[in-house]
Image (cartoon, rainbow, N blue to C red; front, side, top):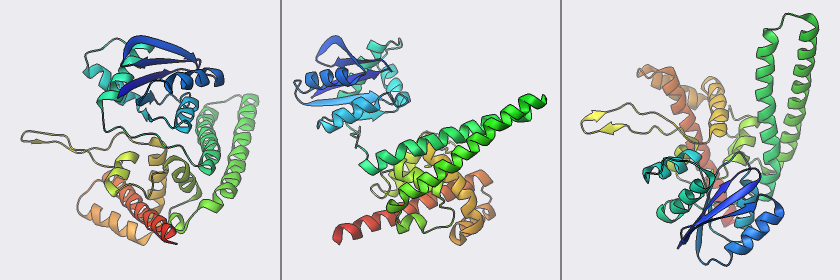
Length: 305
């Protein structure tokens, strides 16, 4: 098995192989990726690893998957921790590519990338743009509060109004575009609003396909142990898909008020002395577990039909 590591930047792809010390460079363009694929397809049985790089990796990721190559996208923290574990503390693009190649060959637990279905891929840019607009709205609102000059405030208010109009337009587009794909499971609980539905559809395609423990870890709401010898540390959540976790957090705030089963569970945890944030995260995990089970049952019913 040959390990291939691809260090991605906006302009280029640095490609390393465990069979050679040479690092090849290709352009992160259509022509460059075509040349990379032509080279990869001659190499034999491969495991390819790339880092998540803010979207710059998507073109090569999709191209390799479409060509039938085994490719995995890893969290940059995971990749960096692996490289440091080998004793390599320096960092360059070529060293990163070599580290990713070693990682591809050494870690059997890596999961191959599964391309999004066409309708999910078409919906994703709308969700991403809405997230960007919401962040801009928060920034603009905070900046507006600090402005005293009337004319400058008027300009800032105009920007704020334009962003709100864009957010409303995006919401309308999202509702329309995701309507054919919203199943009964995604409307089966109070608190499951359109933002959470769109986020789950585009950024958690594994929903219903993994068991309860794995889906909770993937989102980053599974408490992780911190024990050593006789010391029993406090468990904390960390890692996972931030965008999904954020949307689920907002949904849980609504569910503990309006969904009877979640409200009862939250009150039970609080009565047992659990801090409010701990109880809320537990409710997030319960909501995700229920949704995961209902989506799984829907998939099985559809497969039998």
